[in-house]
Image 1 (cartoon, rainbow, N blue to C red):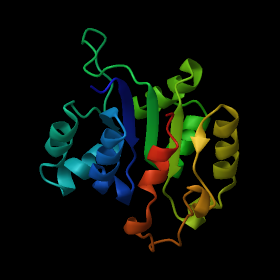
Image 2 (cartoon, one colour; image 1 turned 45 degrees about the horizontal axis):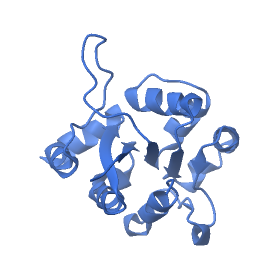
Image 3 (cartoon, helix red, strand yellow; image 1 turned 90 degrees about the vertical axis):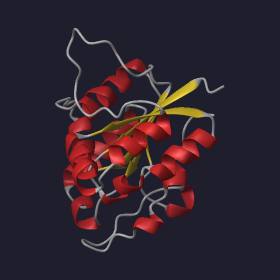
Length: 183
């Protein structure tokens, strides 16, 4: 029986179209996976991939969340033991580091820092976005707050940004994100 709950939080980047990969890997590692999408990622998956939201719900056994619930509504997901934010966009990373929680995904990951929930961020952006000074500051800030940001040396499990419009989905290091979660 699975007792550890992982929140897989996905942003609107091309790897989000392959969430079955980290879900399967996390389940094989003993995680009960709950999927949370940014509003843009939800739109991508619900409009571009007919039936994808339902497939994710069937795969995990939990509803896919993308918006805050009303105060009168019960929580439909179990509390997380860890979070994997993958793919993490530069937009989400910068808002997260600034403490902005204007979406459910951001609210959960900003709160995770204060709750000391182990959190791993696996970026996906191009090298032009990565050269913006806010990205470097945000990575440093999140790492100082205890977030594992897998950016850099691929031999160490990090994501290396690609040139604009030349990302290779097959090279996205999903397993590095799963491997960085607490044992």
